[in-house]
Image (cartoon, rainbow, N blue to C red; front, top):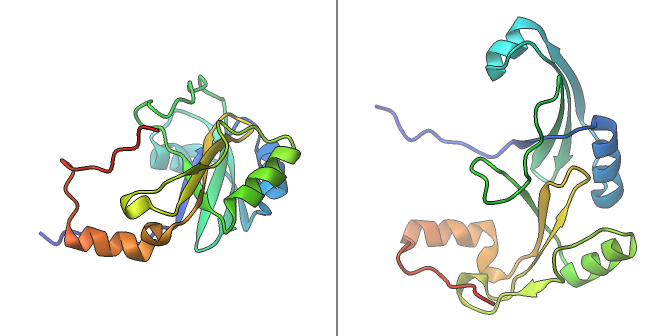
Length: 173
């Protein structure tokens, strides 16, 4: 067997109710713009996604070294509850340089956050700040100001050293 395979992260897909509204919002809030737009229909699209007859439009918005794919399907299915504890729920997290400033600017523009930026003071998370907002369809978006141990290079080092899941960092604030 030739596993594991080598991978890099390319994109994450987010299903939206209105593609134009989502593109406008991600552009206004994060300065993102489509790098490609797609329309998918017919047997190949149905086969690739294992869906019944459908049509969907998509746009890939590059951000840093990966992309967000926004997808609008017709016909639409039932909406999700948009709870992070739902199995299969996926969210995105953007790293920012100064979370307090970003929070103040977005709050002034009417963006609703769950909390103000929360500070982590222990372990690998020390020096990091986090807060969560929602996109127009209610999808969670986390913003993080990275402390030294949260940079991906440091996460790789910790991964190679081994992390004991029976001794997690407890966040109960």
